[in-house]
Amino acid sequence: MTSVNVEEIELLSLFGGAPKLRDPGAPWIYNDALYEASVEGLSVSFALAPSYKDVRLIIASNETAIYEFNGVGVRDVRYHSDGGRETLEVQINERDRLWLKIRPSIRVQHESREATSHQIPDI
Image 1: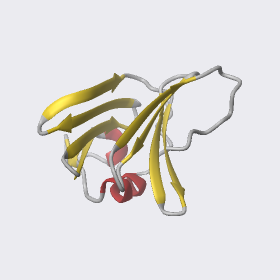
Image 2: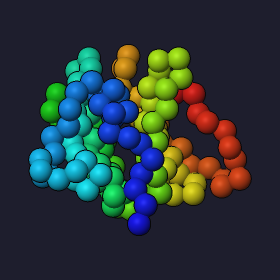
Image 3: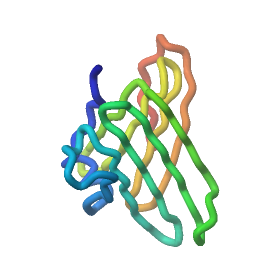
């Protein structure tokens, strides 16, 4: 079993803080980590079980969920940094991608495309 490509330090940078771990005594790779951030009235909750490739993403406004994604056994999770602009990519499967940006504002983009396309979205 392989884990996701994103590294713990990359998620610390993206979310600006340490996660809440389900089991504080277990290594990050075998844990379930919850990352949270708030920007301009929106909050994001991102949970990751790296070795299982399980992801949960909730976007809320004033503590009311407005978007929720639950992925069990996603293909991969990757971190991108382009000129200081940090983005998290959840590769759901061959065709679907979920892009998350935290700063300067929270943004989620879901992309579905043909498997042969290699275009990266500009979020």
